[in-house]
Amino acid sequence: MTGTPRFLTLADVAEVLNTSSAQVYALVRRGDLPAIKIGGRGQWRVESSQLEEFIQRMYDETRTFVDEHPLVEERSER
Image (cartoon, rainbow, N blue to C red; front, side, top):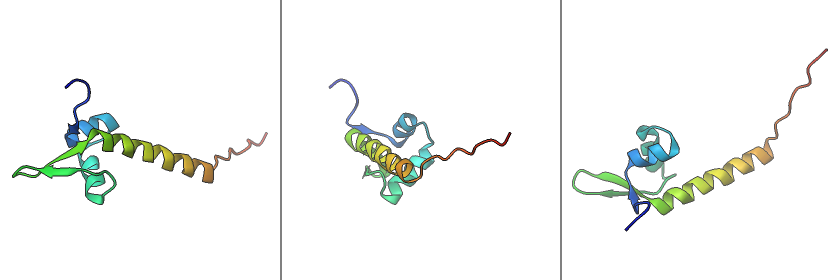
């Protein structure tokens, strides 16, 4: 098996998203980012495909936000 592993740790996801593991944990606990809990110590894993779907959803939500809230630049007074 080559390329991206099927499952990523929360630390791996944090690195991909350039954020903290705590932020990724919050995304998982809120249900924003689907994950599974494995093992006796309850280690979290995020499937790579779920991460890609999450990223696409965030792009879609951002696009909708930008469309609904256009940037209005103020004209400078001279």
